[in-house]
Length: 352
Image (cartoon, rainbow, N blue to C red):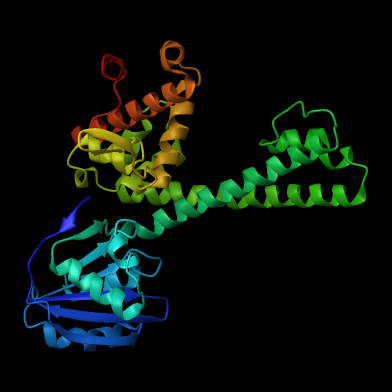
């Protein structure tokens, strides 16, 4: 966990909401010099912090990582104000008190910032932010599509009908099987027709969305994008996810930091030299974790060397752990590729 430890004359903690924000400003001694609830408007915020900005480095602004932080980060960047994004899951001091309200939260954010104990989250660059959010929205739509397909399969099993002979993920298979005609009950038939219509609509929308994403990614960083494509199993969409979720590999000083961010390690807890359990392994980037899991499965497809390696590992530690080891191995390889700006090298991968 990274903490913000730079010194300033004033520290502004902002408890940000969709329509309001509570701003608390502390000086170097910890005294409150401003404390007010404001409308979440750029002009109101500028006016509030104006008395504390004699020089660009006098004031630092911080808010918790929540859905509405984009505009405040962009405003601070435009005004030349240092901005810190607080890690929501790590800011336990805000949620652990006996009493909680906007005024207390804003003061605690400012106090943590002043004391050098505020856990930082990454402020994603504005230029790539919209494309990353669109990629995440695509993932959400893909999950809904998978839910609709699974619902059809579950309905088929619910009425003990013959299993589908082909995969329903392909449109041609769904047309050949005449799925809606398999069910005699009118309400069940209508329910399946709704699922099929939803799947068809999502297929069309996802096709347009993926074309747009591919074109946008090539404009932003074509060299990194093509370098990611050299890894077996990483197609256009996975390369986009890696490109936009990682953004800059230099923000991870070591491969261990990268694996932790991708949720590929099990954090241990120790006390008095004894293990007391494991930490919250869900802290990190869920989208990057999904991308590596997909890449590991696709890496095995048609790869005899990888399949043989997995079979050997499965005998030693079981298949779930073997897949986890392979996923972490791919993550280490990808980290090295991006740091050294080299394409995937199978010899180096298996030699390690």
